[in-house]
Image (cartoon, rainbow, N blue to C red; front, side, top):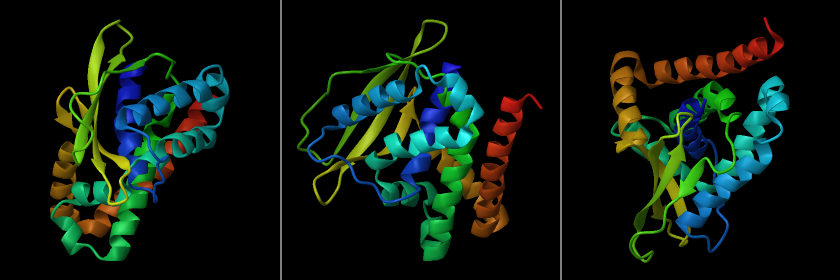
Length: 216
């Protein structure tokens, strides 16, 4: 299940990054932000797994409440759309952000229920924090006892706050990987076609979770 959690962590972090404006706690370092997210997820989920499996909307609220405040939403959206961001209207960019968020977080919310305290180990910081960008390196324990590198790219905003904008699993950037998929789909179906597909996926994922929890 923790392999699914890795998928969710990637998807949810970038998905909620695109969903709405973010408000990071002032003065937190990138390492503190990631550790805080890991700790809060453990507190919110552990001991409540059965309830959360029965209530997918509550799982989404947990994702929104814990992960959402710490990401650079506008920057992540621009990176995912790439060159197509210039082609999209403001309304299309907003619609893409919301649809992308719903499709990814709703699809992988069930996997996050398996999250347990201690699954994520935040490694010591490397280099000074006076630069504009930095990487927070973590190790995530898998079910087989092995660990996987999951790193988070942060940038400092104009207000001086650190915001995450990418997740790198075993050296593979989620934004780069997803941007390649989006690029091909937009060329074929257009931005509106992509948005429609994501909207359909997001709605369908919640319905599927409800059916699974009810045993149907």
